[in-house]
Length: 379
Image 1 (cartoon, rainbow, N blue to C red):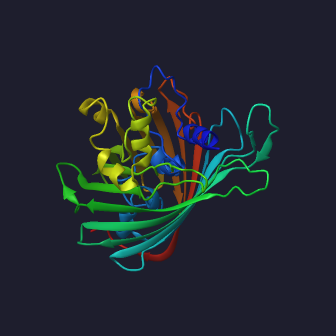
Image 2: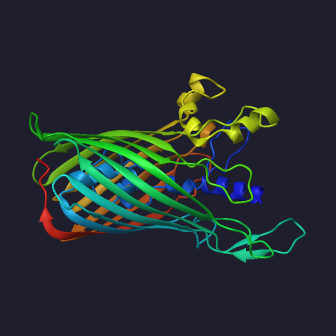
Image 3: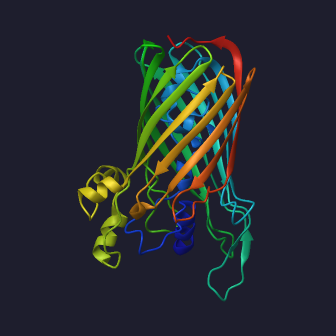
């Protein structure tokens, strides 16, 4: 059973890799938690931790909700997955937030990753069983301004994974786990420059901190995709109708690097026995290749967003991950249209790597509604 689960985890991570090209990619359980489901951030190279607040902040940085200008918001996201191979795999997401006063807000979301019809086999000779495996996560967050310009948030998450092959007696259980995020966000005052105004933003998010996830008959579990995001952006406010935002972001998995020699039983056992808490700290200095390999475990992205008259948006971005750590390298384009209380966002991904990307040539869609009449000023 463990081999079947491991196979799915690898596929979901998008690591269709050649062993000669990738030295030590880091794999985790429930990697769908790291997929950007919304079309705004995915149009900017999956950058979202240090950009302006929106309904999608729940996934990227819930602390941004405390700086929202609308009292409430609701969004629906849809992203096809592996569309080149199948038509029934997708990631869906529902998100809601409520800023109930000037300084604090709550948010909630549901992410559902459906894998369509899949055939399970115990062995090559055994008969197959067709099932619809899936994973989902339910989040609840609370954000609070600690000052006029800085806020923090904590998010609680329940995760459920149903990737197992059903047993003959249907006794196979799902895997469940809980995790937390800790995030912070800074937004500057409006600044005046020669010919334009501007505003700085910066944020961090430590995501998916929690125990390993495993099925009840497994001796060892899989690390959750604990992740550190750091990023910032700057708004060039040219006039009332034209605003250009540029930004950058880095990502580092807080998961230990696998042993250099997987055939070393002692090292493999130490890795499997390691607690999630120890793994978070060990992830900063455990790469067998030393500092240079640690640096390769940092992925980066950059993006830009242009708004005209707060009605039309155009976006672009780029994401880069080392060839030795997964080789996700792609460019993105996106657009948005806002009418009254409704916003429609679209994004598209172009892979620039030789490694296939499960989101390649995929159109992602988001629908957002601003609810409630009360608004808040940015200052």
